[in-house]
Image (cartoon, rainbow, N blue to C red; front, side, top):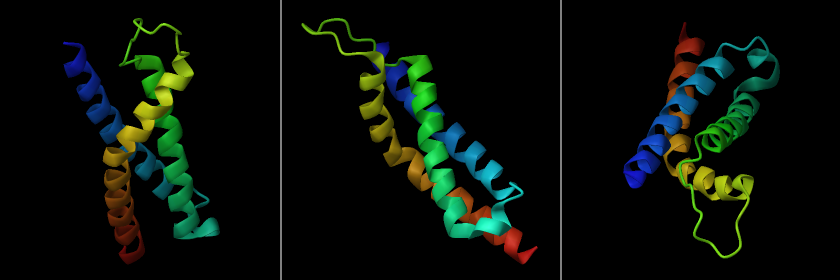
Length: 105
């Protein structure tokens, strides 16, 4: 059951973070001022922070068998990095489609 919760939380957090951050960056009032490339990088950093915060709160990998306990904030970093394989392509796809739609509209 723990493995199911682990992978489900990674998938759900990745999808939610990517879509919410892409929407908020595209609709931000400073989008035209900083340009699409800088806005995309800002959204990328925001996705990382959102995913890190969500994984910190969910704690999908509760490990207590270590001889030396690892703090939660250090256990969350590899999970966030691993989940980047999911949220990074989702964010890039959603951001580019919304950006194209905004430019052509």
